[in-house]
Length: 117
Image 1: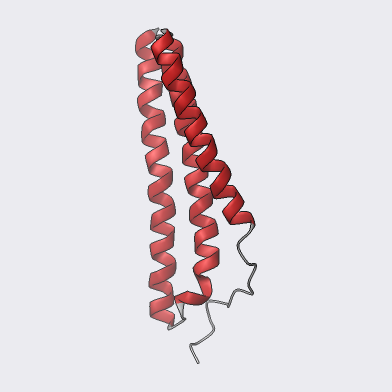
Image 2 (image 1 turned 120 degrees about the vertical axis):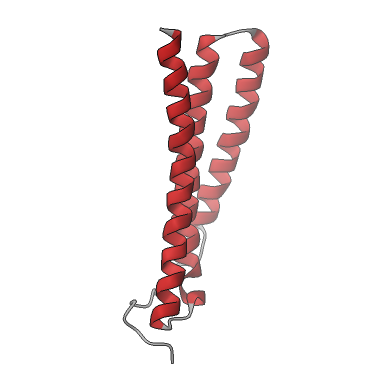
């Protein structure tokens, strides 16, 4: 049964990293689209930050779940303390990312068909 959990832990690691890569890939596509359509990416920076922040928060949640499962397999006091520190740090990071995302100025986003003036 422990082997199954080890595969689950590895899968969650891969999923967490994949989520980050998807967010970065989407960001690069937006920048490339801006370059092709000659739209200033400065107008989209706030939306890009919000989108990327959401991907980072989601990946942090996946990593926290992975850490919890990993600690359940070997619940020594040292592992529990390490888990607690990791969960607190990742939760704080997710909280501040969410806080920053929520307090970014809401701007009118240009349509991708708008030309740079």
